[in-house]
Amino acid sequence: MRLEAKPTVLNLILWRGIYESEKTFYIQAIRVGLFSSPKLYEGGKIQKFTPEKVYPDLLENSQQYLDIQRFTYFSQGWVALHPNINHSVGDVRYGLLPQDVTPLWGIKINPLTPDSHVENQNFRIF
Image (cartoon, rainbow, N blue to C red):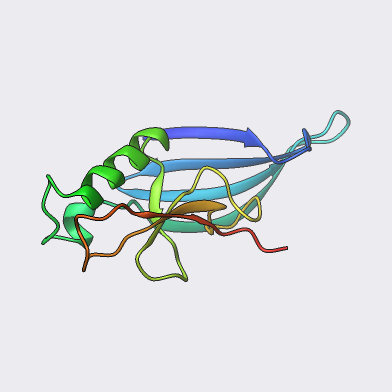
């Protein structure tokens, strides 16, 4: 099991907590205050992404596979499929909402073109 907590953008009172247990990521929001007890807001859970399970036909020497490995490395392994966008993988350490599983950014995989680069994606909604 591993655990990480990060303050939300421009906010030291509301934190995003994320932990991994048995290939599942659990996300929570934690409100801390100087004069009150911490409050926990239960969030969602999402399965950890492994390219071998989702894309078993993607060869390890293909450009898409290498790009997935690079993205996973820089995301420190906190990677999951986007819950609403097909073939998109995101860094779940940073989310749209503190307790939500929807990531802020990620990559789009095209299994039909394994020798092309993945596409960078921005999932923010303004």
